[in-house]
Image 1 (cartoon, rainbow, N blue to C red):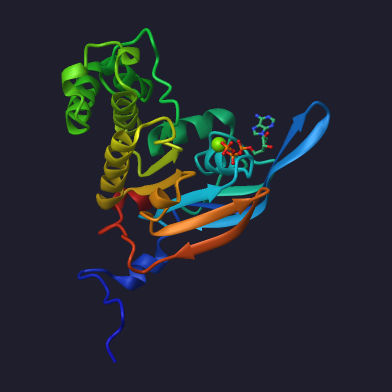
Image 2: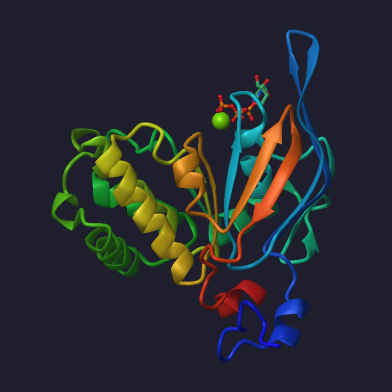
Length: 260
Ligand SMILES: Nc1ncnc2c1ncn2[C@@H]1O[C@H](COP(=O)(O)OP(=O)(O)OP(=O)(O)O)[C@@H](O)[C@H]1O
Ligand SMILES: [Mg+2]
């Protein structure tokens, strides 16, 4: 009998199974202290995100979506448990080591864009590359290329705040890509946008996945979540549902450097 979903041509299943997840939470909890009261934002979550995954995180306000995303991207450290990146534990790493790793491997996109107001669009995109030690002329060339790609190249010399929300988010996506990260994390990337700009931003994110990046985004919009291959639902800091659909898109080819 033919398999319902034929294996992609050229795919090497043995190799794929050897590849560790892009990022994995193992028994991770995150507790915050609010006015002397403990808030369990994430409770004992174990979740593996394979390389090349396109996943949406959904759940009610306060269910722990942002906290979980920040933990996946090492923007925040767990109270207990460990975050493994490409199979490597990170709990023992220093803050500086984690920051260096995050800068090279992870791109973040936020709901409110978070562009630096006194910088131009180009400067905003160049900055993370300079922080990683890229030469200024190379960083500028790469940033300009990315701005062209997301359709705001003509706005490079403008101040970010003068752009529309949709344009600012496209700049933020260019900024997230400037260090060519294998993992892109987006926290309600369309939450501040109108329907048309939302669709453009989602198309761009889907494109990043298509070219082999691992993509995880948080959304309140179930229609957008359905574009992902996997939907993880949180309630009260725990995963209450984790569904995959075979017909949803998978990356054509996980990026080779995801295993490096
Ligand atoms: N820095 C913090 N200090 C204290 N409590 C926090 C902090 N960040 C989050 N929390 C608490 O942790 C819980 C989960 O918050 P989180 O921001 O992860 O939820 P969310 O699902 O992203 O919500 P929303 O949909 O509103 O963005 C909430 O009760 C929140 O108040
Ligand atoms: Mg949130």
